[in-house]
Length: 90
Image 1 (cartoon, rainbow, N blue to C red):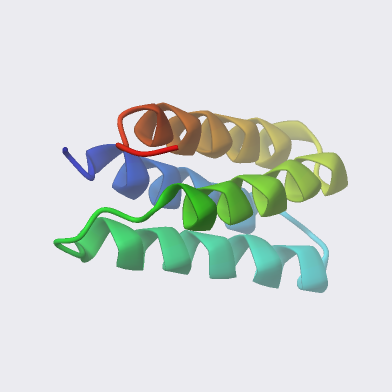
Image 2: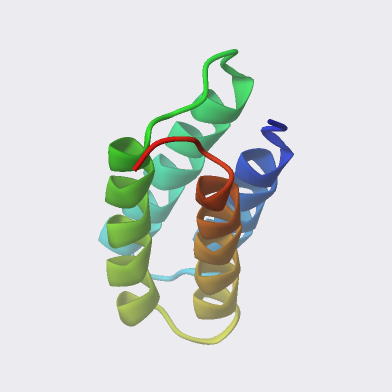
């Protein structure tokens, strides 16, 4: 399975972080971007549980952002969801 979707999600979150004004929210968005970039670089596919945790955080961040940042977070969450559909298991 290609990890390109995770890398794309990470890039969208970096864009969201740049468009976010609140320091705490910006840090949390950036941390998610970094975490997804790390997962994308690994040879192993992350499990459903880990991906679900990221999706939950992204859902929270979507509620805490607006405008371009919100759109980027929602897009990133969609990419993680699409990637998760291809993960074997649960």
